[in-house]
Image (cartoon, rainbow, N blue to C red; front, side, top):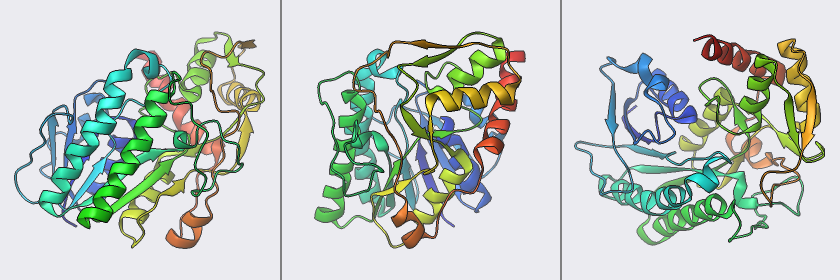
Length: 313
């Protein structure tokens, strides 16, 4: 199948992508500076002759010996807690890092895959979100460092596609969850599960009526592979269109964990928090033949089991 470079491959999604690529027969090289990734996520791959890990910051000059057929650019802190604590790193890896990765793809004549995000839509005024929607983003808000960085990453990717004729793919990821997320990630899934398992109060920010749609990690990675192997450039939304309010989600996690935790409401931590998030996946269905298959209950059960092992360690 060739050789693939995965930037950010020691992260939550990156490590699951490595698993899938190896299963498909690829040789896989990971570059990660481990700011938010962890070697724990790829420890099971060490020793595999088709796998190589390089501890590296992809905002620096990017070089890799030998042929490279695919570059999957996933490197970036992506959690709300990272926005105020790692704003410069987020901007650099999505600007400089994307530029360096595109340059390597051009030098190697490799297919370039950009992991973008539904955050490019901002706090959307269109629901559900279609790929043609241009977004409602505050460029100077706390979230802007991530939202605008990904919008720039998409722009430079398309510039390389149009100007240099590079084969590029852009996916817009909607809320995704699963094993290997950081327990202290700051996103709603690890927050709620961690609180429920510890018996702490389950904290719902705002009125709990804001919505999200949750896609299990293996479904998402399947969408990645289908896009890369297609003749589509994108951007294409990949996510689960089943929408739930934060309060409903908290109640479901409380039930699945058998927790006695109380659900409490607190003020929103960050302004510009999207009130609704739901992908329109018409393009993914019609152009890629993709749609999510793992139910929320099944995916949450797998994720809860993983976090139990982390809390018991």
